[in-house]
Amino acid sequence: MSAFKAFVIDQDENRKVVSRLTTMQPEQLDAGEVLIRVAYSSINYKDALAATGAGKIIRRFPCVGGIDLSGEVVESADARFKPGDKVIATSFDIGVAHHGGYAQYARVPAGWVVPLPAGLDLFEAMALGTAGFTAALGVVRMEDNGLAPANGPVIVTGATGGVGGLAIEMLAQLGYHVVALTGKEAEADYLKMLGAAEIKLRASIDLDKVRPLEAAQWAGAVDNVGGPILHWVLATMKQAGTVASIGNAASFKLDTTVFPFILRGVSLLGIDSGYMGFPTRQRVWDRLATDLKPRHLAAVTRTIGFDDLPAAFDDFIAGKVKGRTVVRIGG
Ligand SMILES: NC(=O)c1ccc[n+]([C@@H]2O[C@H](COP(=O)([O-])OP(=O)(O)OC[C@H]3O[C@@H](n4cnc5c(N)ncnc54)[C@H](OP(=O)(O)O)[C@@H]3O)[C@@H](O)[C@H]2O)c1
Image (cartoon, rainbow, N blue to C red):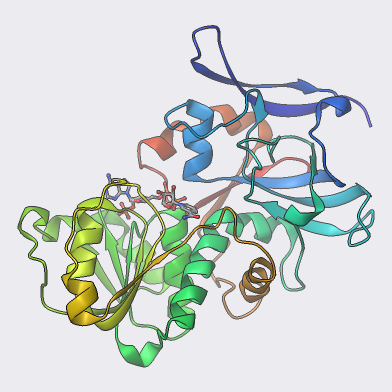
């Protein structure tokens, strides 16, 4: 193995985050039992925060970015994997405190590696990536909490985002009546194509006048944005409704009341894809390869080359991106 290409995130002498495409030597890779030739990675909102320095995401400088990767095992010191195996590695410290997926090679602990399930190829695994894994984890956790299509409609906020769009598809495929909450009126047709039965515009909600309890509408909710919208979601949940709190694209704050919980029995589930261990991690990927596999995965995904990566992050920070972005590394 010789020198290889990598996108490295570092700090300059003023502790400002700087990132660039460069060359790395094999011995610069982090410790781990499994060496992977990376085929694809992806861009999540978190990757954009990390690469631009817009969020304090990186916990160890320098660090190869990319919280997601798929590829083929080159070497393994762990009996669960052998050269040639196709694998997925997402979450844990990848791309934040351990060199990540924006490099032609990655070495990671075996405990972070998932065998590619039958039914997915390496590209599809990254079209899903952390966004798909998180959306599916939200759906699985809500179902475990009693959510079923007969309970009533499910609302998805941040609908045009990576997590939002994939959550809409998965829920629609399972037979839920899905309502997409979006700030982008022009994307109504896209959201309907994904399976949304109704589109609700963010501008239609007066977020300054939300009472502790409003008319009960939703049996379930996938929230990607946090802040006043999550307060409104909680206030509009039906009796025994379930909310999966996934993201903070609008705000990390939550100013709300206990009434949805104590008067309507609403459950607020925290979804953390980062450190979800086995066997749940494998169970979620197996469902992503079967009943939760989105039918329109190709339509929600654009592919960029490795060299296009440095210029790709700003649109994520500006909230301008629709769907998923796969980065072709060696695939
Ligand atoms: N908990 C976890 O393990 C986990 C895993 C992955 C991601 N996340 C988080 O989940 C969120 C979504 O991730 P993503 O990858 O889907 O991000 P994304 O692709 O950038 O999508 C975020 C979406 O949120 C909406 N939005 C953006 N700014 C907003 C604002 N100021 N107010 C209200 N809505 C706004 C937009 O959709 P509309 O215009 O359609 O509303 C946007 O497309 C992020 O906060 C991310 O950090 C958490």
